[in-house]
Image (cartoon, rainbow, N blue to C red):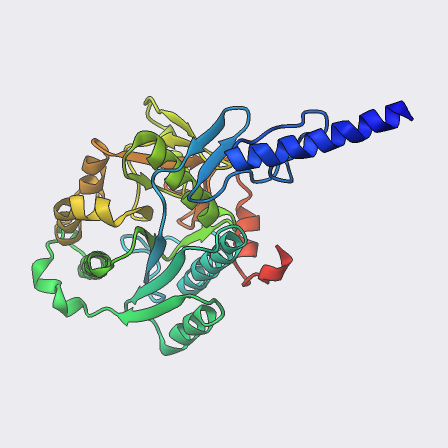
Length: 350
C-alpha cells in the first residue's frame, strides 16, 4: 500500500512539474521512453514551434526573432520551348508542358504538406507565362483552383522589354529570341515582386520538381538561420552537382530536418525576402536586362556578401538533360520525385 501511494505521489509531482515547465517555457526530455512530456511528443517528431522557437536535440532551443509572415511564389512558365540554348532532350524525355505541370503540382503538394504544420502564414502564387497554349493554361488554372491560395496568371508581353534587353551574340536568332523572352520573364517577375507587400519571395523556374517537404523545410530553415545570423538569407532548393566539382570551403548549417551548406552560386530558382530584394534590386535588374557569362554572374556577386544556402540532400529535382551538371542531385530518388509530382496529393493522407 505504501508503495502504491509513493507511485501516485510521484505521478502527481511529475504532472505538476510538467505543468510548471510549460508555464515557464521550458521543455523536458524523458530519456527512458524518448519523449518530450511538455510537448506530448516523441523526440523524433517535430519539436519546433513555427515563428516561436526551433528545437534540435541535443542542441536545445533557439528563439525565433525573425518571424516569417507570408510566402509569395512566382513561377515563370513556358510550355512551348524545350531548352533555351540547346536542342537536347530533358531527363524522362517528355514534352515541355509535362515538366511545367509537374512543377506546379509539386509546389501545390508541398504547400498542402506545409499547412499541416504551418497554418498562420499567407501563401500566394503568381505565374508569369510566355506563349503557352490555351489548353496548357487551362490545365494550370485547374491545378491552381484545387488549392486554397490566392493565385493569378499573367501573360508576358516580351515587346514591353525587348528594346531594353541586351543578349550575347550567338549567331542563332532562335536562341537569341528565346533568351530575350527568358530575360523579359525575369524582369517581369522582379517588377511583380517589387510591388508586393509580403515577406518571403520564392522565384521558381518551371522545371523544378519539389519534394513534398520542401516548402516546410525552407520556411523553418529560413526563420532559424536568419534568427541565428541576424540577417536575411538566400535559400536554393537544389543540391547542384556542379558545385561539388571545384574544391571550395563550405559552412554547414543545421536547418529543420536537413543540413544546409553555404554556396556562392545558384541558378534562378531561389527564396529570399522582400527586404533582400530591395537591397539588391539594381544587380538583379542588371541580370534581367544584360546577358552575362555565366548568366547568373550578378546573382553570384550578391552571394559574395550575403548568405546563400543549399540543402543536403536536395529538396528539388532540376529537370535538365541527364548529362547536365546542373541537374540530377546526388543521393536522392529522382524517379520518386518525378512520379509524386504527377498527381496533386490528397492532403488528408498526411
